[in-house]
Length: 542
Image (cartoon, rainbow, N blue to C red; front, side, top):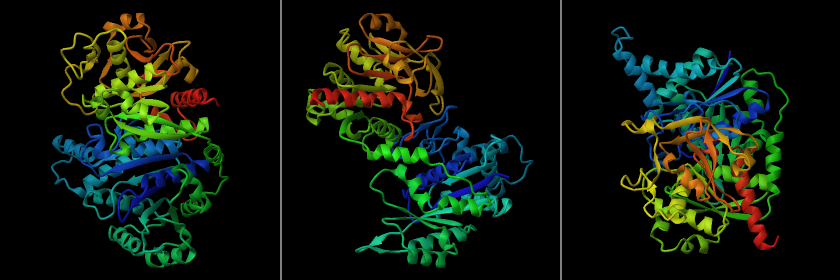
């Protein structure tokens, strides 16, 4: 029988439940187990695809085109198990499925209720993930929200039922809670006691507690928490503040023997732990020297999580180049209002420019200015999805002289629609899950930055977009010098463009950030930061 670990949170949100669950997954993988991660989200949206980045952070895309919560990005960066749309379970999906079955008469006229019908649907989806792969050993299920939230109750009830049905030897409850600091270093355990009491009221006795605290808890505090919560002292752990990186958390948990306690509790034979990739990553972190400043010119800069995977991929690339990456966040609307891009980019003394994905017209001309500035000033530039389309618009306007050149997303009446809607998107009315989504293969042209990065002709990356480089202008663009260096396998669509005679100017239609890891940076991000470091070194004389 597979082993199941249910990870819940208490007291308040944003304690790092996703990082804790991912770190535990990394430790169990280090022990040679095959781990699968699941996120249960209480929101009624079917998926994250139609949510504003300001509401819920970035949309993380899986290989099969699932538009999921950003926590799946954490799972992908910390663990190696496959992720698909099945690994993201939302209240919207569950109720949609149950109502559809009711309309089809599959409940034989019975009254449809939260228990057992909603909870049965949740359980079947959790079990389906473990059954999809015969090699699965452990399934870690993170339940979103905070215990006590009305939205989370069906998921907690489903977890309670599964723990009861599988037996305590096969299912484990890990509860993350808060130990606040009051005054001068006085730690308070009462919120944790109340949080565990709330879990007990739901019928779940936590087996392991992970306490979010400013410092490592001492033995006396752990014993006090254990006494009031019916949790063994050796099963009380600390997720304390680190001044390095969140990727050190697995190693901190390893030092506290979290994985040993979990394996013993689940009756899994102890085995050698191989965490060498994580230790090597921390060695690269410690070996960093110098800083490069990267301007992120985007639309959703007020919330850091809006571009979570992009920021993490830049950090990973910095580890590879042994350099710290400083993010200079610039709202593209500010550039749009500026007479000259130097007013923001030049005075900020940035070493590289990255324009990430996005939708809608706001701030687009500011992004075009940023691309033009990087191109003319010989500053390394990386365009992702919309960022590539911005490169095309800049080239059309400022090199070919087509002043009205634009995307039909922003200007339907332009005479030079150099970026246009995909043919299969023309009549689309429902916007959820209908874009070009998920894993697609691209062909990299020889003697290109694209090919140099991957060292492979066929590259598989994930997409999320409706608009593409317009084939109508392909010959004119290429004839004027813009390098078209990546295509779909049938050559029907342009997947990558590059600036000629430039230190590093690359734009790709896909999202390489989704497959970057701290132990293995994505090749394009790696080469972008390496180019930034080299260019900065050349003009500094180092």
